[in-house]
Image (cartoon, rainbow, N blue to C red; front, side, top):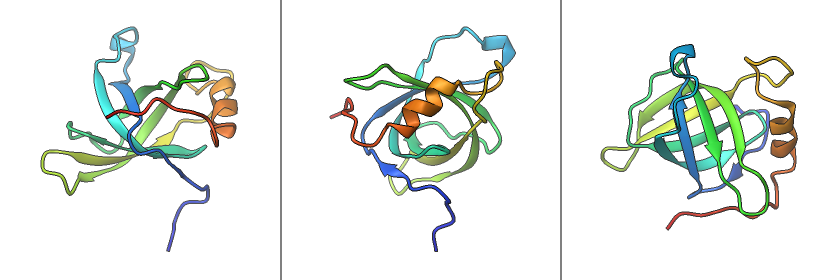
Length: 124
């Protein structure tokens, strides 16, 4: 039985650039990459080489072909070893959307609403 309230869009192969979120490293560049598996208005699933911990905050950037990149903040809800040795499957819930700096932007929310049918950069 599916627990999610919102339908996820499969996007296997899109690159997610991410960094752990903290005030100390706010302006640090996105140095880590993961492979996006699926996304919805409330969160995303990805596969990474790094074992991430439940509860950690991430800042993420996803590049698209025909529209500007999507930048969002989220909290890791679960992380488990993938069927591929050395990889981890991670579920991330987006932080709320709003006008304050600790929230995701309302522009990002609109991008997520319009995501269905967009062309995306795929990795090989």
